[in-house]
Image (cartoon, rainbow, N blue to C red; front, side):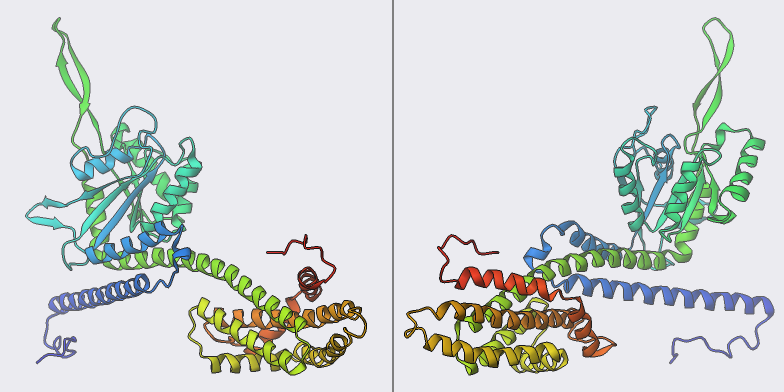
Length: 492
């Protein structure tokens, strides 16, 4: 029974040529094994991501395209689909090049400047004979794959901003990029190629329409492109010459007997390009598809997380402010000190539990109490100020409320003032507790590497306590002022 790993003693009695061949085969087998492992890991990771998006209906709204893109990427891995996108300026023969690879006219071509106005896509099934061997598309020999060829509008067309954005989007999804030129590179082409290079995707630079140049001129242009234009972007091995729709001179005889010539379409010269594409895919296609799919999925996932966090942050702020006002009103209206303290803690615990549910963190009431205790202790001065204010002003409120009958209600005016002051201090404390809790939950119920004290201090130092106090007092004044004629409008 074999272990599946190479036997180090198997090469001991081999001759040098056999040994070299066996070593090459072992290396190739190992590379295929690595590619297959990476491919399966990518598939598993993407499948988990799709299944566990954790988005509410509100968070999903407006992100249907991105979510569908993730599912498309998963389908791509399952079906071993390779995307090859072609880029270039108008009239460089991009569509003709793809038609030549396909062996049929699928993509629109014509004399009109910029025929391709939107991206188009077609499947390329390759089974071309090369001598006695059949060239088949496969991802490092594992199964039969499907290649999708994607045509794009010219990078220099009118309304180019929209189309360039489309090009960037397609470049993100592409596993291999064909950049087509038809002569010496222009500044626009070089800049576009440089931008595409940033996508970290394999690129083949295709020098198309070489039939339009004498051989000497063609070679001179090729050498100039290779040595002066793109040597910092591409290697010579990544530049291919082609003629997607060559024109050939054909002798004709006019009715009057004179001989002449006319240009007629000739057979496409794209075999070198086809072989180069298949070479890249055979060598590293599976790894490319896995890597590019995960990079694209990671980018989409970041957008989803950003949207989710933005929506949840707005909801969290609303929850915190509702907790602040509930606590402020409860304290303002209640003259009993013990009840003030108990109700304050209950409202803070309820706020923590509501926030934990919003961020998808499971938390029990005991856990919320423990978290509140830790936050309150870490907040130090703010928590102590709230406690002293609650104890001191609650007693004063009690006296003022008891004196109301004897003073004919005159003591209610200072009662409201004291109540609002006490409630505002308690509200600021609750606001700080809510913000600290939010940071804790965003970090996955963790304080991070710096610990709770650092987190609390960062948040407290960023709070504009004066603004919060004024907002609480304004809202409370509208709710509690006995002189209010009822026309005050409550802030949302």
